[in-house]
Image 1: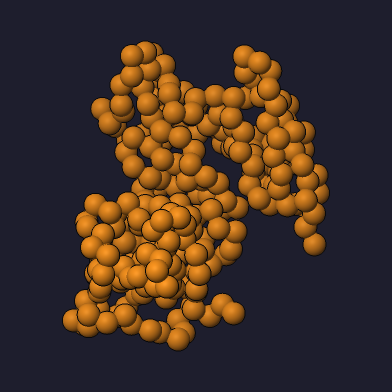
Image 2: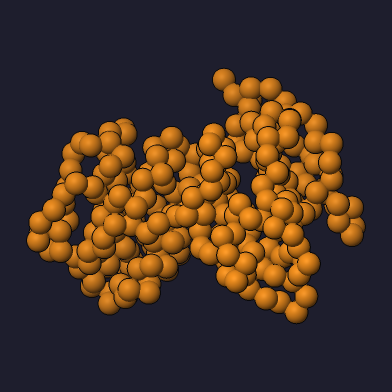
Length: 246
């Protein structure tokens, strides 16, 4: 059984503040020896990510400069360079004195979610590879009772949903993230008990004109089929259902 540990890591700031975190692990985490402006720890305590260059980098940076470092079980695993994360310097956003490259959006036990100037990317701990996050395969608007499912808003909802699923502590959720671009998704905006809701129905391997007119129900198929609701007013996802999970 994993235990809950509190983690205290000194952070190098103007006021000498400290980072306090918590995670579930089998043993206490190795003590961090270095001071960094930003520290992230995976829920299982296996990986620690440190950075002094979140969001902004100096104009005179080198392609080989480190954007963030990954530690595995207390030992340096990889210094991830700028050129590994950003494909083309021209995609960077200029500020008065720096370039904006992006940030570490979230971490889970398998990977790091990066929000970069070139879009969402994922760093995989096992392979040390960085991949571009692709959009879903196809989108079907089955019903739009609330008249809110425009192309722009649907893209926004799916972007938020990806972040939500990435941060969920469940193996099936991490598998869903890995195969995100394989899914078709059906959407309905509905008013349910005086509340405005959006229903997302994710599926794979099903074709036919009825995808545009009827919500398809599949009783098996594991994480290739899943559903979730979104509360428009509260801006929260809820009632996640993944086929094959009780």
